[in-house]
Length: 503
Image 1 (tube, helix red, strand yellow):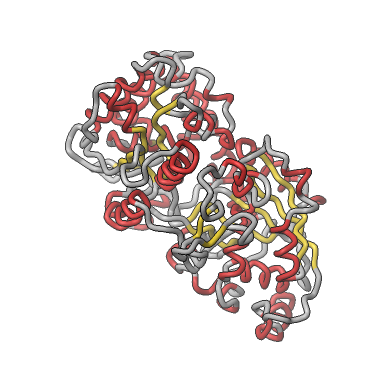
Image 2 (tube, rainbow, N blue to C red):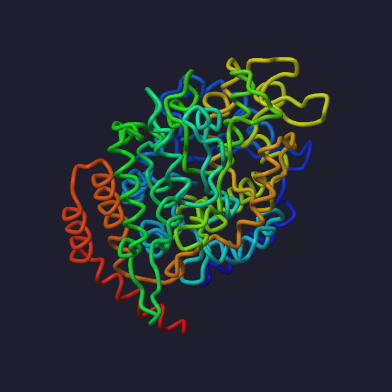
């Protein structure tokens, strides 16, 4: 208690210094950070020392970022290994959960600072949504700053010009028409219908929930919890993906494709894949890329955004790509009590307009430009080909946006509202009512803390094998039984007890 009181006193003395004032003498600090890397094949390492964005952050704050980049595909595994090695903890790291077993057990074991009573003392951090902070809380305490995301951003986008070549010009209005479109695209020579990579959670999740399955867990009419894979709609979704794979509609090597290379099949000329189940904002960025690099017409988009499709029973469900957040940024106990206020001050600055712009956009005239219309672009005005400015996403700025939290909204320079951007923004509000939730999200299961991540990985592996035709339905059901036997049954019982207690 004395330690906590002294901490609060020290923070109270620093309360007037929660932002980096212009011209203020900056107290230099090196901060060891671990972030997921979506462009592991880039030449980022050779640019790190001379990265102008990192230099600008240092000049603005006095903070030198010493970043360990971990390929996104292996980030969960590396997170476990890193937290197990308490001697070499980063000081700040992204937890992608946020309520996965690794995050929960690490918080309970004292790996992270408890920020519950500290967040309200910082200007920008305090502006975050309390409900979203609550959704990431562990035992009622907040251990991280959530990374804000639009709630209803998951969906489908596809190339309508190639759909027309395949004989389908009408935008699908239900799941059956969506399936017909997929098989039509699969019939085109040398092209895949759905673009998949080794990050399969989104594709499987969007598909099965759209077909009618619950998200992670469901609740039957008697109030009993059950895993989503027990839903016939979940199986229907997997069967569709398996059939499409068998028809040549999915790259057979999709599990070798890193998420950082996910765009490659779409951006080839001609494209090798024509549809993606993912965040819809990637869809309007794809259209803008096509305009800049392939001469596509901005007034007649060749990318269609698709969501909120009724299933076979007329019901609409949208997979929750997040819970208002995509993981969180935590401060580990490698940070001393003395240094903690300085780190929080920096994370607070990251949510300011200056901080958000540097992390998410980079530097004006280097990685983004303001055109005469007043909007932000990723290429200079007058340029028709932005290929040479691709450093915006994969070298100069790279994955720094993974440190972005934006708990107080998007304060970056505004981008032009294209046809698809406007559609996306308008539908975020409308579609929010269709997003379903995991009834166990905020419930506690000791078994989930101990082995939930491993159990989920084994389930996903079996589902991938089923889609790829490596195992049949009996093999899939055997994997489900293994899940129950290895801890799933106990986890379900613990969740049921916690769920009943809330009633």
